[in-house]
Image (cartoon, rainbow, N blue to C red; front, side, top):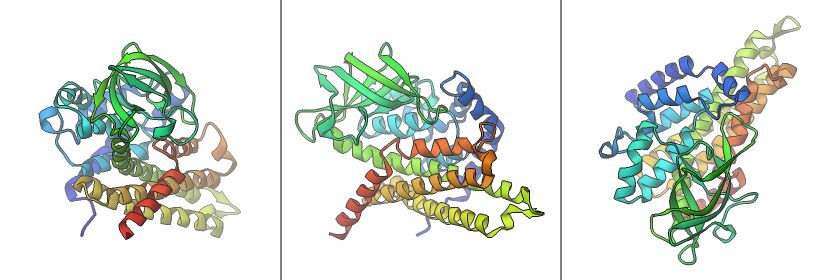
Length: 369
């Protein structure tokens, strides 16, 4: 079985790479870091015009009707560029949740807007420190009204709609709800990566529509996270490769004692180690992309494998990139910080690495049973 991307998909990669090199250089990422804007609105508009936000949305709902393989290619290049846009929240999570569980009316209302980028979506699960679970949910839904608090919600301060996980009294203990965020109280939350905004969202008898069957919200959430994990893994893989390339380029140019530091064994070994981790992450990403696109039964296993390996690869490459740059790598003026910030953020945005390791073990045990 060949997991490699096709020639057409690699052509899409080249086009995406060229576009992002032109429209999302590190100076653009730094402008969001240093400025007051929550994201790069011009870049978001251009991405939507290219149709990236519509990639996996069916044509009858205003999308391109392409596969998750094309979306994986785009995710990798966005990760490579450390793009300061709400793509993952809107496309991997909100759009996917509506595609997976939405009614015909909900799809007709929201998918065309999400496809064009006119609406930005997000997914609200966490309610503070600790691993989310049905037993810990405090947000409730009664008679079409939602009450509770979600924090932190990625892109919650700029989103137009949210898929919210609330407590349910029956079924698996949770239910999903679709909420129009117009007029909802939202407060920005500071994080390690200011190029991706976060918010605290407070619901007070906020109108909400059930998304999917009531009482099946937790199982739907796990399915959604498995699907999103593959795309996040590709984004992490792209960032990991960019961090490694940044470290390699600097090591080739930086001289110490009359020779490039890349010639020293200590530098060679750490970069080789990063390369091995990145290659493993990419290999697992191929498996995950295939399982996602084919809706294979082993998707939970493939998703957890891709997520864990990509998380480890990106963090290692980003921190060793800083170390390779030496003292200058820690300064504000150097760009090493962007990949480190993003690696730390992506490592927890849909669950921590230990939680995905637990999922991986559980998936292996299920398959072995």
